[in-house]
Length: 179
Image (cartoon, rainbow, N blue to C red):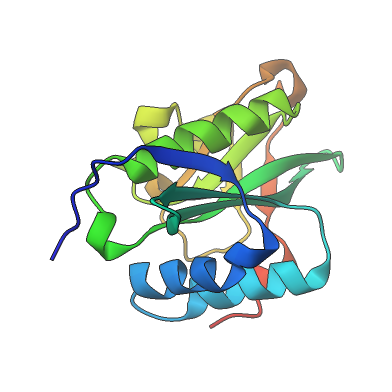
């Protein structure tokens, strides 16, 4: 049964105490454990990432994670950006705008931090509302060859950084380690 929230949604950076709840949100939101495992592996790597939660009445009900990605241009140039993955909302709180709130807050934070772009592998009907476009429009490809072009999207904050470039975007190796 879906929970209707009447209390305010608090969007904030993750705290250490949130880790078990974040894992539970990711496990419950997806069909398998892959997304929760990726989050665990990224956390264990010690690499810098941005993890944001949505909280209602002291309970973590949503989570979004941003990690570094690397564009290797066909010219050999390398440009660092950020990747959005995963975005998860506990099933009891889905379809109430929590994912949108997390996505908007997270993307805005990436812009404020100076990221030139954010990429996402996601539902082509969902992410365009946040300004994401097909990466193929900019001659950018995902390193994962089996990804449909319409599912690999990019939001560009600094177009001059990517001007005239084409190439492949690579996610962190932890994404490769999960089946």
